[in-house]
Figure 1 (cartoon, rainbow, N blue to C red):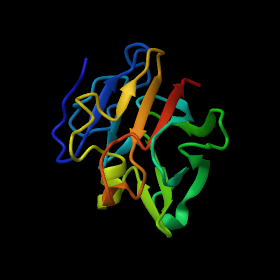
Figure 2: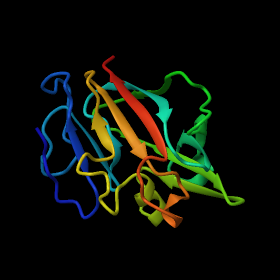
Figure 3: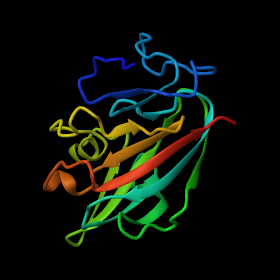
Amino acid sequence: MESRLNFSALVVTLLLASGPGAGAVDPVPGGLLGPGQLILSPESGLVVPYDCVLYVKATGGSASAKSTLGTGAQAGEFKAVITGLPHNPAPRKEVKLGAFLAGDSVPLAIRTEWGGKTYFAFAKGMDKGSRHTFGDPDKNAEGKGILRPLKRPGVWSLSLDDAASFLIDDDDGDIVLEIRLKRP
């Protein structure tokens, strides 16, 4: 089941396979989301649908630039979580990002070193680089979206561009992460 939203930017919503929304909230004003859906949009960032502990793991990617996954809403707040993306992630195991309440926005961020410069992109960023990294401006994700459910309940694949990619392309596969939500 999929809900469509009227945002001016990309919104991807997916139904969580873990049951009909115990503890879930609708993070979007107007009640457009059903219970248990994970949402990614420039306006809201990555919003968790229920109280959970969020884990993230690097699973691949095709970028030649070196990136770091972190948290923060601006460059001065950036805290590294996984370095060496996409080819040499450290750590290689799943990392606990923290506990979140239903409706919380996860402050995901990407830092990319490329061409002697450092670029940042933020899940809730409104700049071109952030919208490009955490969105799909040219709609080339073939209708699947950059955030896709995996076969296990509460687990998604998130395919992102690196933070410098807005200068070159929009292939949505520079960095591939697995996101897992575990109820407390």
